[in-house]
Length: 374
Image 1: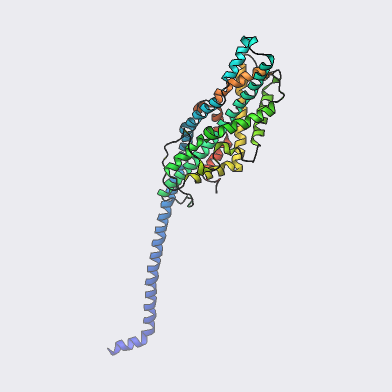
Image 2: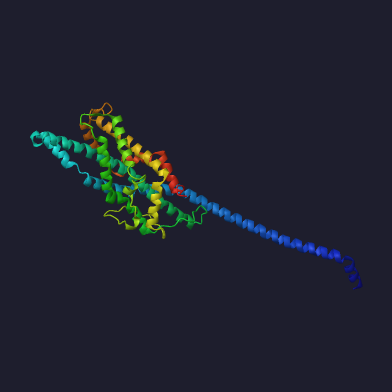
């Protein structure tokens, strides 16, 4: 017993120091192990997150392409069919052409002044019909693309949230199904509400540009292209910088009611973002400088295609538009080209050409990714 006390007195300091070191070592070992466990858990979570993000990225392109198909195969064909019907109703030139044909076969039925008046009306109205059709098809196809890409992006975000992806915009709301359908149905606003004003304003510009043009004046591909672009440029510069948007969508969404036709597809999106917010988002896109550039490019491409088609049409009859033809003869070509401008979406040359313009493809890729609205 005495020896133990002596041993303790002699080695007390060493024993305490050793015990402290061993205790600290044990505590540090436990702390290290806990830290390593946390690191391992974090690495597993990061690996899971990366896997989810890669899955989302892989799905993004497929979903983007599906969204474009919805626009091309469902929404746009329906809206185009209704637009074609409305333009035919509001710009029916059959009675005018029948009177001219009757006067040609029976010269005594029309006086010279009556013939000149009818030809002048045909000149204005045929160009108006062609320009209204060209502008409406171009802008409607772009607007519907804007709509379905906005909705498609919201659906993508909903899917990503369900998978716990980190690639999310937390301030983006989801879309109620009824509001989604109403939003897509608003593609018919142009045919139901904006068409009469569109016709009136384009007709006013056509009258101004073609004033003084005689039926005997020669037109070739260059002069026709210049004339059409002059009309479009004057029309687009009318009023405020973005006044043309009011032909495509209501200025006050709160008082907008759906027309007799509606363009509705079957994408189903969950609750919360309402119709007014979707329309504001669409108007923001249409008002953007980026869309303004795309619109200019698309209209220019559409006019190029129009003139090329009319040249091909004239050559098939043995007369070259490139070499020039009298305005009176050109008017028959103008009347003949309108049905193709308003043709089925899947076979519409204007729509197909615009769709394949690289700048247009890039614009809608960025819109889908929300880069234009950040």
